[in-house]
Length: 369
Ligand code: XIL
Image (cartoon, rainbow, N blue to C red):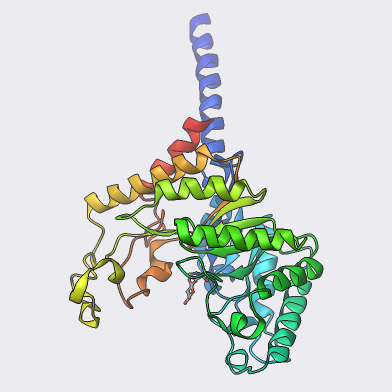
């Protein structure tokens, strides 16, 4: 009898210990809570809680959210005096309700601009737009949005400044000006420069020069976002590690802000005359319309595992890892750079089930403790 009750006590103790481990490590945000925030981009139905299975998944798994589209100029600021705040307000309320780190994406970007901005012809008018835009939007969410992508994608692949409307009309000082405006409009928010391929040497050098110019002007910049739209066929692990080290050496936080891994061929990876429109919707460019083969599922999982190993190695430098979309079904990569393909870039499949990649990533977190 004594033995039996002792056994029961041991069983209970083991059970509790086991449960505790499950409680700590069964969701991404808790598994990595001592390492970095785990974020996701949200689209409108997700913000409005219209997808019930997704709703609990999002609040359980993620500690940070980024607006996928609704804070972009073309939606939030469609006319000189016209702002659409409804959706952005909902997004911010959602983040507050769930105690999430809220990222505003983005203030100044050449893409998804409203038509009225594209028609601006004078420097003065563009400066007026930029000032109103940042003051109004960053100001409205002052104390609520925790971090802003102040300037998005200002660089070319060779590290020079992209010839955007902003560069043409305002000169390269526009980036510093944007950060200055944002720092005044939302003094408590973290301010970031965000771009893709800035792990690559030339573009990285351009980003470093740009960040140094902001710092030299005495203007606040808290971090840099490496977008992280990569491919399982071409993961830039070495360059990424160099980038994390070099960006961090500037005294700013490093973030992976739009992580997704395409499993499909990219048109620009194909050499020579094979790159043409005929590939659109072809079986070659859309090889897995009916499901992800096991071998590719494994390759995706191994890719995510090697990325997260790297992130954990540099967790002292990385403050956030944000996925660009919750699940395969909602990823923009089903429609870009070719429309109507079936891609599988996420940790969750189209039914919101955890993929092999999820399991490998979360396992790393428990090993890390
Ligand atoms: C994408 C969205 O995911 C799509 O829904 C939209 O149609 C186009 O923009 N870099 C960025 C993001 O900074 O804002 C982009 O988001 C993806 C590339």
